[in-house]
Figure 1 (cartoon, helix red, strand yellow):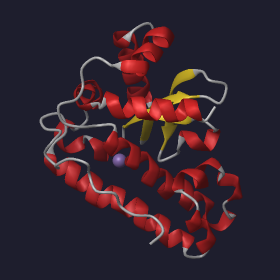
Figure 2 (figure 1 turned 60 degrees about the horizontal axis):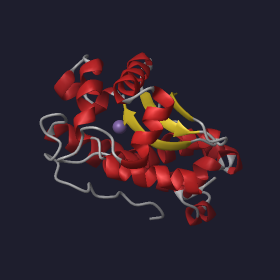
Figure 3 (figure 1 turned 30 degrees about the vertical axis):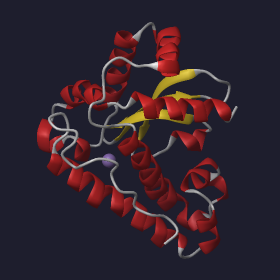
Figure 4 (figure 1 turned 120 degrees about the vertical axis):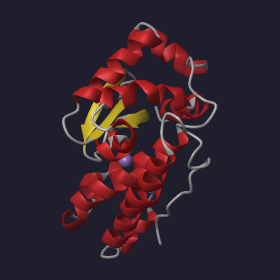
Length: 206
Ligand code: MN
């Protein structure tokens, strides 16, 4: 298998009470695993693609053969987006941002409260399924964006510093139709240390 399902870096119940154990089981073991498995199945027709990371496949999506391009967008995107998502959450997390990400937020979005409000509004406004992101653009600006389905910011040349999953599968068992409540509670499980690692990675890529 070229691509592997990465285990959760904490217990399935570690994000309680904000994200429930049953949601984490279904989300990780079923939804995420299916994206990885479908990506592996797609590249069986073009095994040389397995030598690249899933991130690089998305960065260079127009070089992926057309017969599997949309499948790679959907399932490579699903694999990469969730791989990020599990790591940027954790137990004993949340609170005010720390380190370099705190500076980015304060300098570009007028403080954490304003930033959260804008991020949550973008997540609530995404019609149907998708993600809300803080991205670093190729010219070094920081923006809140949202993408549909499993589309990755990498396909547009943007670096996803972090994002929240607003597919109903991410919250429906606990929050039902109350996406704004999920978005607002989610900040209690955000792992700023890992987000600072990703910010450093974004900046080192120029
Ligand atoms: Mn998901």
